[in-house]
Image (cartoon, rainbow, N blue to C red; front, side):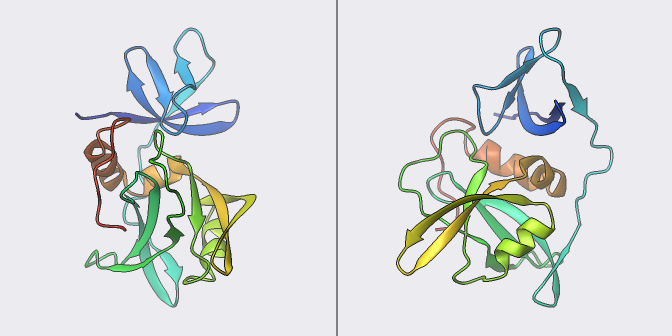
Amino acid sequence: MNTQFAIILSEGKEYLCYKEENSFVDVSFPMMTFTAGEDDFEIVKCNRPFSGKTFPYHDRHLSIAPEMYHNGWLALCLKDPKTEEPYTVLTVNLEYEPAFALPDKAFIDINNNPEAMEFLLSNRLAEDTGYRRRSGWVNYPMVKLNLPMFYRLNPTAFNTMLNARQFFGQTNQVSIQ
């Protein structure tokens, strides 16, 4: 299956969508659709994706790559941009149930990466939801991820990850545990 993705702008907000017949469907909330002639929206042209963009983290310049945990929840990995070697994972998987669609929320691993939350917020990669979940001694913050930005940063990895997942079907296990 080869899913085609588009970034849709509606009422000042961007949504990462996939095309299904005459509509665009929000990847994180499939009940939200945008249909030409019925809804007021525009397709955002991504003439220059941000592929290759790096971010300063721990005195290094790293790329960020979305991957998936075994249950379909999103994992955010920082990698060396030249070797693709993993540096760290910014998220922690606190979900027991399989993900529905592609979640736009994740728990940030402030236990192993205390500056991860500030990193994501300052780079506009996520917004704090205000929700926290306790695991052991740590209250992990939940963020709402900027999926259109992650798509711009790494469309190839994003497409590979989502298509390998058999989009909206059962998830396939990926190396992040």
